[in-house]
Length: 158
Image (cartoon, rainbow, N blue to C red):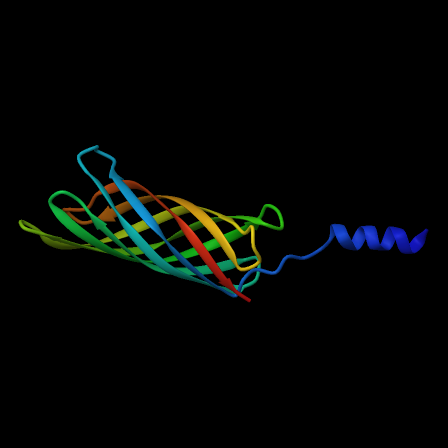
């Protein structure tokens, strides 16, 4: 009877190890809070786990196109992971972002703070998908506040 209860306890306490490196590739959208513009494009990011179950760092680039300009954003997010199950993870993140706008009438750079809710799903051991809603708030005279979302493919490495 004792060996059975030991196995049962160890199965319940199974530790799921995070991927040490994860690549994200997906589509992106952003809507200005004032409702004056929307932009669509793509994103590419890499995520590293320096402190297991405590800290994940994500660096990424997002390219968006609007009717009157293009925009390139570079961000560095500091995320706290929460394991929901063996195949699902949730992260809260915040970090700086630099946004460069290229347009006919404007060519500006803004510094923003970005916050994200990151939902990651791993149906395979190293392949998954994610959805990441975000909120950006900028600094400076031409800064904007916006809601955004990215979604796409995850490729993980142990």
